Image (cartoon, rainbow, N blue to C red; front, top):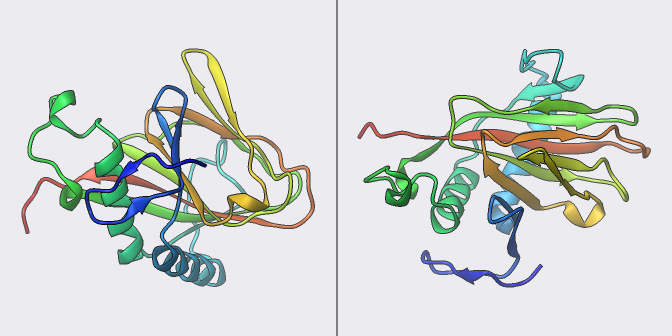
Length: 196
C-alpha cells in the first residue's frame, strides 16, 4: 500500500488506498485501536450472543460485539478524512467525525466451506470489514458496482487491515477454500445528528 494523504488529525496515513473509483478504502488499523477491536472480537466469540441476521446471507458464526471506543474514534476520523458521502458535497451539512457513530457491530468466524452471500446494508452510510485473523489465500471479498465485480484478495497480510465502503454497495465473500479459521469484524456507521 502507498501513502494517500496527510491525516488532518495528526498522523500520516501510510497504509491507505482506494479501490473501485474512490469507493472502497483499504487501510491499516491503528495498533491501539486494532488491539482493542481484537480483544472485543475474541470476547464476543466466547460469549456467543447471536446476531440473528437473515440466514440466507449470514455466516454460521456471527456474534454481537460491544463497541470498542478507541476503534470507533479511529474509524470515524478515518472516514471523515477520506470520504465525502456525509459532507456538504453530498448535500449534508454540519457533520464531522464526532457525528459518525457505530450502529451495529459483529464478529464473524469462517471455516472451510463457509461463504457470505451477496447483500448490502440498510439504514447506514458506511460499512466495514476488519480482519482480526486470516490465513494464506483466504476467501476473496467481492464488491459489485454497476454490474461489475471488484475482488479483494484476503491473505495473511490482511490481518490488521480494514475495508470501508458505502453501505449500499453490494458485497459478498466467496467460499473459504483453505483450512484454519478467519475472524473478521463487520459493522455499520451512521450519522448521529442529535447533540448529547
